[in-house]
Image (cartoon, rainbow, N blue to C red; front, top):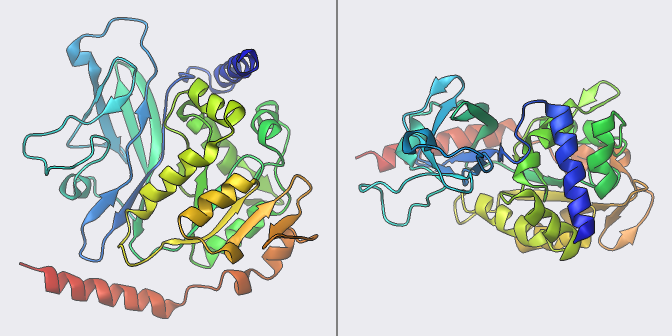
Length: 340
């Protein structure tokens, strides 16, 4: 436990140094909203944390204001004693609604644009931000772990960028950009704590390799605090428990008759366990080691991100314009069918 404490102390100091006034124990996880065939909306959980306040807050100061793309939302969140934000259950809310998400009608008032939207949470002059990604029900998702997968190793991958050292896997930006250009959406997943969500996004989307950056996509970190996340990662070595739950939450946003996950990139056996659990075929799971070699179907060879980039159209076939036309026609048909 002393080791975990030292690591946590170092991370806390690093966050304060890099982000200035950012609360090292606060943050927000990116949100995914999926538009259904009938036009309704489903949202992944809203995980927002401000950390524990040193001062005693009055009831009116425990309200969290929400704005999306610079426009104030028609609903707010509340803050508990642990500094975590939540939604109050409304009397007219449908039974079974989670306290961590919103109804389709409430989500519709946000006027989300397809792709990335910026959401800002403000409470008692403190502020954290995240992104809301609006996707369609027929989206094909490629999942990627962060530490050891986009970076060259787990631990150093977190610390090296803080001191300005590039510790990324060679060729990853070009490959992931090509996958995005072929019509797939990238989802980045990390067992890092919610307090590291801001820095994780900054690292990913400031990464440049030969003039090419990573494509934008939701970054899903653990909603837990720093030390609980570290304990799971370092002591119990069970990050897949969080990752499986997280991916299952995303899968539940899509129609029950389709699996949105097309492929997954990771660096550990536990990543493979997570991907298999949510239905990613073994032949579409790529495991990379610190040397940049990729393992597929238990075979280790010298294939790399650069090699896969060279045959990306074979492994990640471009989604045809015909599929997009069929999608739009199906939405129109379903809207007519469900019209009262």
